[in-house]
Length: 337
Image 1 (tube, helix red, strand yellow):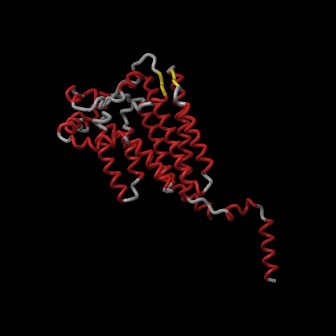
Image 2 (tube, helix red, strand yellow):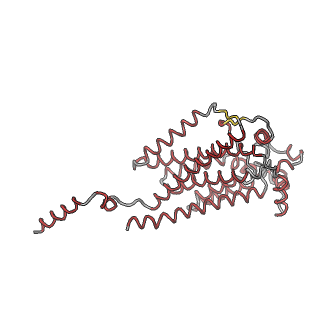
């Protein structure tokens, strides 16, 4: 009788439609997996939205686009995305797939944001340097005085400030790879999502506040004591797209031309957030962030309000990422139930 009962139970189970028992036979995806996938999908949608805006700006302004040298880059990014999606369902290759995916998504977001940053200058909103400087003075901050003190009294800080500022993006991309390869999917994809979101946000804000930075207020003797093009690195592209009569968008040499808000500040905070969970990595990231933020004055020629704007952009997108993460948990609980 016992064997007959087992046969009847097995027969009833086999007659049940597959869809009815799908969740019983397949374990639910963990909440962290769902959150990581949400970050990936939203980042791609943001890139598509930014691309549409960039194309509209290019058409509206009549800017010539030079595609030479970009086909290899586009093919590489497309190949990375394809490889990521092919491998994403193979457990043994999941970490490699994530590493490829986050790099491809962040690279696409960077190209889209870089194009936006230059094309939006053709809108010719009033140059905001005088306003940004007045905001700094209202806060009691004098960027030129800070640069002068760093150059003349604390020159040793440049040993740490220069690499921290010059290699911020490279450090961020390296962090994406490390997080993905160690299996920390949610932090890797959170960082990629926030990178794309904050970049598009800073670009959209910067369209209304085009500025060349505190370098325009620096006395010649201070500039002479600094490295060539310090505080003035992006001026040639700014002048070409803001004042030039026939600029050419060269996708292979896209450069940042944003003063307010400071995207360097954003990326520095993203790096800090990526490594916040471990005491050692958090301390190292905090030290890096401190020198990098100090370097935005002599390195990027930013106003102090640029730093505050970058902080606000990062805080908004990071808070949104935490909301998405929290929202994934009850959804997975309902699926499991």
